[in-house]
Image (tube, rainbow over all chains, first blue to last red; front, side, top):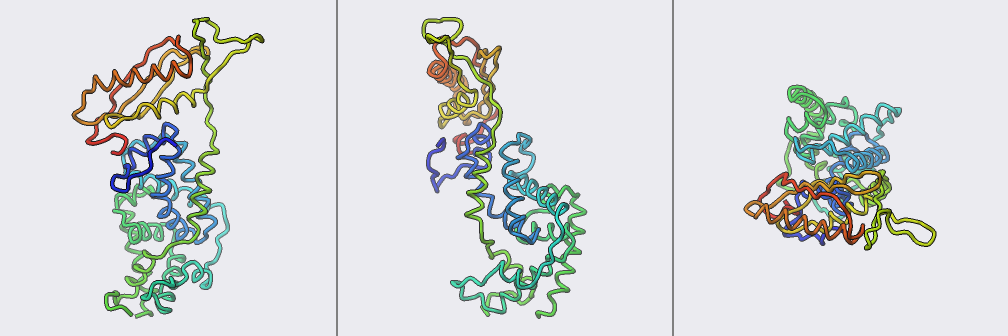
Length: 188
Length: 157
């Protein structure tokens, strides 16, 4: 293994890890996978509505990142990785027949955390309702909303991830938020 | 219901979604690395040369020779050429008919270090690796380019 055991007090930066990975250091790449993979997978699951497809998109994105030398540092590595998984997810979405999101399937995706006293049955149903509403949004509205509200990306970052202009991102977000607010109003 | 929960249902649900985890990551991360490690990129082979400067490489009684994969050499250089003052960002091997003719190394150096000294040290260490893996009579140049300078240890920053 090339890298010394990671020091929690001084983790290597994305740039340092990618630099080593580009020279064939798979241990360095594994650190990047653990650092960014969970968020990428979470995004893909909620975008595609299917854990198997999300796993495939995430794997394909990382294999592409491992093989690619096109990243030049114009955007943050995280943004570039999300762009890769977004593209793979879009490819899968185009190829596969849409699967309707049933409420019990959505509920199974987010079971109540038994150790969290704050999450009662009402929260669980609220979360399931949001998942269902998200699944019914058009692709770009759902993607923009997830990247903004869950992953905290800026409009410029979202534009880079999805290959849109920042203006388009604003439009998709506005429409998506409005639709979700209308869908969730009965929960007031 | 906790007192600090937002009243707006969308905001509340969004917060819950932000905190929710999607199961399956541990298995997926192992699958990702399996696929990554299974990627095979073509690598040139480099002819080694023996200690007595024979031109055609070491031959045993059957006349066979020994080659080392460029991937093996690059990995050895990658592991060796690291210090708190520098790290390689690119390693390019030039070959002519399976013989190594040049090694070109891009370095990222720490700010406020002696770049010339870094270059000399990298060149010396590179020559050592070439001698160990390919034999003591490897001709060719070792070109060092300082491609970037960073604040701190280049292996971490």
